[in-house]
Every structure is written in C-alpha cells, then in structure tokens.
Length: 303
Image (tube, rainbow, N blue to C red; front, side):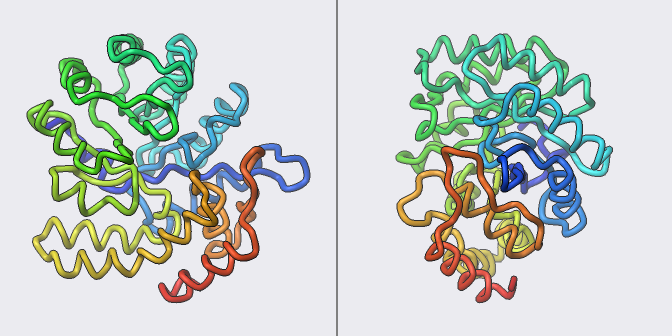
C-alpha cells in the first residue's frame, strides 16, 4: 500500500468563509479556521478548496490566494492538500503547479465534471496531472456531483503512476466500491471515505480513513471511532459513531444534496467564528435546520 501515514486518517476539507455583506472571501477568518482546526486537533491534514471549501464558486485568483494564505498561516505544522479540481486538464495543471510553488504537500483532483468524459479520458487527465508535478496526487471520486464514476479498472491503471497516492471515494449508490477499488488495485491505493456516514463501512472494506466535513466540529469523536475500530474495539467504534449520527443527519438539512452550508453553520456555532455564509447559489441554513444542528451539538456536549 502507498504511504498515506504522512497525511493521516482524518483529512478535513476546510470551509471557505465569505463576508456576509458582499460574499467576498474572508481570508482573515479563513486563517483563523485553519488555526482552530490545528489547535483543537480535529484533523491530521487540511484540504484547502475542496468541495466543502466551495472551490466551484472561487475565481482562479481567489483560489490561489487562499492557498497562499493558509500556507502562510499554518507553515509546516500539518500537511496541506490543495484542491485543484477543474473541468479542463490544462487548468488543473496550472493550479497544481501553483500549489507546488507555494510548498503544498499534495493535491486533490476531482474527476472532471459536467463534460462527462470517457474512462480513457479520465485516465489521461490524471496521468498528465501527475506527470506535471512532484507532489503526491489524491484522486477524488464523487459521481453524484460530477456525473461520472471512476471505474475500478481505471483506478487500477492509475496505480501504475507512482505519485498517485490515494483515492477519496464518495460512491453514493455503490456502498461496496471501496472493496472493488481494493481488489482492482491489489490494495496498492489507499481509500479514504468521502462520506462521514460511511467511515466504518469503508474501514471494514479495507479503507484507511475519511475526508470529513463533519470533523470541523466532531474531529475528536471521529478520531476515537476510527482508532477504536483499528484497535479491534468495535463496540466503542460503533457507539462513538452512533453518537455523531444525529449531527450527520442534520447536515442533510431539508432535502439538501450539498451539506456545505450546514457544516459552516455548525462550525460557527461551535467556534464563534463568522463562517456560516455560503456563496450563492448555495443558501444559508434555515431556522429549522439551525435548530436541528443546535440540538445535535448539545447532545454531543459541543454547545
């Protein structure tokens, strides 16, 4: 298996704060968010400009400045992974090279979205990106958002590329895809769950950890659940996971597909940092959604 220990078991896709008046990026608060995650030991690595970081709504200039601000804030205190996903291979390579120049430790690349490429196009996409950098590359599969699924056979081909070090999988309709990935790659490529609610199932199938938006507020509990499972204390792992489950359900809100707004609201409630404003077209949490979040957080002793 490729070396993933450098990045750890819990990777948090850090939220991107926006000012409430004009929805511009609040870089000052972003630095405080990164500092909070580090000082409260909520994660092993931070992903900057992932899905929960609303990379899709950032301009190129905003994304690169965000990379720079968070790197300057955290220095080398914990690994940083740059979310460099974009529709075109050319643009991803540009982001990747900026991340490498800034001293990032790895990049995460979501499968190309909207254009719905063939599997061979996906393979070539990742191959060219990996060849453009010395950084480790994490493959990110989230078919519910991108419209394409990374086939196990394609990941097996990507395993021949040395600096592709892991895959984040949020398979959605196929809860057994981790098993397919492990078998197809002969266990060579570590698999991270992309869904908080699937973390124990993914570990059971041979996964190594989670990319967890919920760990903005329950990273301590997520760590206890994962470590208990790996130590063979399955009952503690299960009970700890169940304690978080109401919060994970609350993140789904009133029929939302994207939980980002509710993760941001929960983090603001716990940290008292002004982070709850998403950028349109995402909308803030409703009063009902906020009450559900508060109830779940109170039961966890977070409020």
